[in-house]
Image (tube, rainbow, N blue to C red):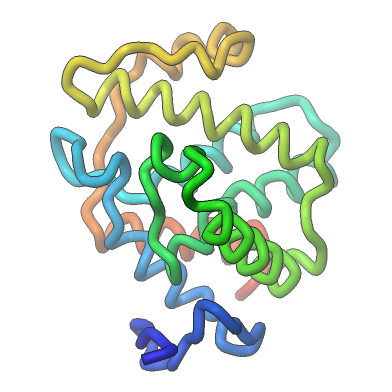
Length: 192
């Protein structure tokens, strides 16, 4: 088979994605069902909840309203390609063995940004989102993974969010994460 079936019943071809087949309800549903850290968390913790956290952290920053909104939009969707491709654990993903996958992932991720944001993030914007993604990773690891060792990939940002970093994560069920993801989407993109 050259396609996957999505929650909404669409036939989605990951190697030849069509922008009209990308659906926010599918993204929300799929990401809410995918557990972070290849399932190694103490309790279920979804990619959707992670994406919400990254967008909320950016919302706490003192950027201009326009920049903050755009960054939050990008942040909410920064892992949206995983709804169609899943993900590969970092040690494998960046080992050099999955270079083709990274190309496919970037193409799909940029298509998702184009569909919902009308643009793709510039390198500076990608770097900002990556920094907050790494801070979320550190916070999640600290609170959800046994024997987590700080990777220091969020240095500099952790100090800004020290109180948040130390605050335990309130876990969401699949349904809560999906509803919250869609609520954030409607708010950030002005969808009624």
